[in-house]
Image 1 (cartoon, helix red, strand yellow):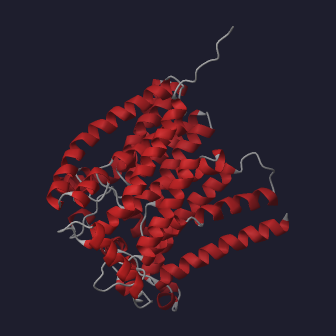
Image 2 (cartoon, rainbow, N blue to C red; image 1 turned 30 degrees about the vertical axis):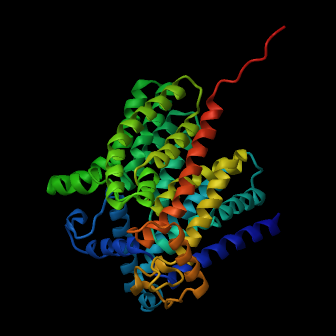
Image 3 (tube, rainbow, N blue to C red; image 1 turned 180 degrees about the vertical axis):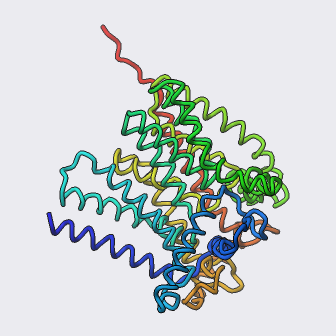
Length: 444
């Protein structure tokens, strides 16, 4: 038992050191640079992130978290003379991503080992499960290479549903609602998940508790956004409430239109898709609420269906956003052995590894880890040129399949993304089939 604990702890430590090493060697993408911008302006009293030159398209959770993290770095720099020489601000900020990621991994470990014996054996099992989650390539690509805070809303939203599913008390409902509110404060799109969560609370504890929990869901984002809204309402409306992503054909029907027709047509497809998407998701959420109310679906499955549908039907999705689905997929693979979530984890990991490590963004100056050089000031590893055979293969692929007028980067991105889009729809279909009523055997 002690040896299992030592091995599990050593594995977790090794993963952590590998994360730190990658974070130190490679700077990250433009997203990471933007968060360092937040770091900088957080030093100025009364700063407003929604009036800066960069778009901050979310409620203030991350802005406040970065501000507190920056204060910690500067405090340590005052106390320790060697601190700034050894721990750079970009690396320290990546450690904040890792903090949420480790918390998510530990949360999964605790709940996936419930019922196991307590003591060293249970702790070893928790650490083992956490290590398995942290070893998913898609997870470490998004945090260590891309540099993004999506582990935070992923942790809050998944924890909300799992806690409500596993615990039937009123206090569990309050905690779940507040956690979902924190997810909305971190990213606005988890707000759609309030429908199944509040329906389950109403079904269990009545409408008064449902109304109270609705306040818990709304409070974090409302309270934190209100001061900025009062100071500059137009900026908040445009940058947070009105932000709809990059609408140029990177995903789903828009991506197909960009691959096959033209960039202009793809933009029109995405704009039309966006007009349909919001009412469609509202109707889908109501349908899920009805299934939860009739007890044909539990609240965790309701959260899963809405989350997968949100990504499947969205007009645009960024690579780092897929982190949001990782805990859902990992849970259903580890607990129930589901096949389609396993395929999702494998393909997403392979796709992101190729895109961030192997496949260059630019065939004119192709290098390994190309996306991580969007923030070269934070990188300690000079660019390593891609091998000639790889560039030749990519040029041959473009010559055979890329339409005239389409740039290389959106072409190769959509080539990797379209299979993922199909996998998500298959995942959604597999969950829908589980809801179909089974035929009862005839009595003779």
